[in-house]
Length: 464
Image (cartoon, rainbow, N blue to C red; front, side, top):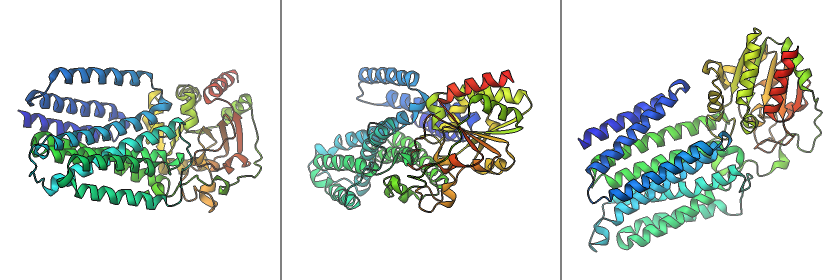
């Protein structure tokens, strides 16, 4: 019965992940995978021995209350921070389970206990990757939350220092058969430091990639924990290996997609410290001549347009303006205009941020177009409205070799007949460079909070 339960759980994990590949089925996919995990937990508790069911119940109640609280209270703009914390907790849980399983074995009872090479490697990797994920994720949370500078934090010899930490971790792993718990403590401390020093030199512009990478790490840590468990509990271990492998592989694939969307290699993201020298960026220190328009003037431009492309960015998320842009789009569509949405893979602060945001406002999935699909549409577009996006629409990525975003695929909004840009201020984006699009002849600025601006724009449109 237990084996069948774990098999059903594995099928739920695989099928749920498959459903996550499309927005229409993503919610059901999440539910399916959650059911699979619930089955695995129930099977483990029901068939387990020497388990304190009272403590397990208390832990589940506390965890459920905390989870429900954050699910209700956390705003969409804070979702990347929440995902970062979840990644960290997942990695930390894997490290704790692997450590507990190993230390609860004969290693503390029988001095002559000689763990196998597979067990040593599995425990070491689980503790290393899990602890690294825990501390690295909280650094990512701090950067996203503004508690830590979003600029790369570097010091001379940093990579050499990280290399020395990694070398000491390997030595500590080798010494596990002789020193047991002391070696594990050493790995935990060094891995925690390594997680911190791997993430602090990464700039805020690269945080979406870091989040997906840490998500992959948490899955790998879980898979390694499965190898630790498999000798004493094969069914549970195999289920964890399957679950962790799926998370690890999907997270790594997503990381590669994000890197491709930025035209960067993963090594460049991790070691490049992009954003550290803002002064070298495009147009820094140069005066950009902008044209500021009112919502009344912008409404007249929309009224004359036939094809409109909406480009959402983090500013839209901050203002919680997804419902407002849907109302504006529906009004324009009722007047016979064609409205599309351009989604850049690294817009926002986490993978899929804009997709989730717009789906929350019940915007049809068919109107959401990815980078390759939407870029040809800009050439015959009457109006492109940019709502809080910055780096992903900066033409400097195509032409300015001195810019830190040079080579990054961007949305070609500058090719539209008119570009209406909404920003609260003239502050730069996460990459720390000025956007030369703001000074283009076909670009106009409408300053203000995105939600307030769109509400006023809709009112002006209705008065025409």
